[in-house]
Amino acid sequence: MSAAWGATLFALPGNWGIVGLAAVFAVFFPAGANHGLRWSAVGVAAGLAVVGEVIELSAGAAGARRAGASRRSAIYALFGTVVGSIAGAMVTIPIPVIGPIIGALGGGALGAFAGAFIGETAIGRDMPQSVAAGKGALVGRLVGAVGKLGIGAVMIVIIVIGAIF
Image (tube, rainbow, N blue to C red):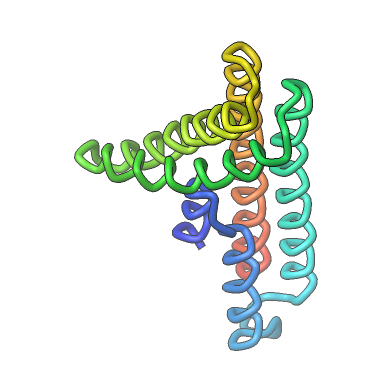
């Protein structure tokens, strides 16, 4: 589940991976006398995964809306987020443990900025408008990622507690 949680940094559906792993665990180790995982814990985790997606999408949309970004910029920012996250993690691999995490988060934010900036420039917006759209995408990505990571951590705690008790 920790690896799935970390996948969230790369703009991948890590929280849904946590839900899937919890469901597999619940199938093979159902709640009973010898402990196991109740399906209610899996349901709560799935509900939290939905909340995490809403937080991530609404933060990104709010950042883009505030800056007046176009739909094209939003798509470019999403693509930039994925590419930037992977590149940022690769560049920071030499820094043990925390390097790839910070690199993926920072690279994703810079990728979102670059994508929104390129998207706005491509439709003919001037430099200040393009930079504003990029800043909105960057801030939205950071806020959304932190929110989604926090929700993922809560999901893991709920599942672990549900499996132990």
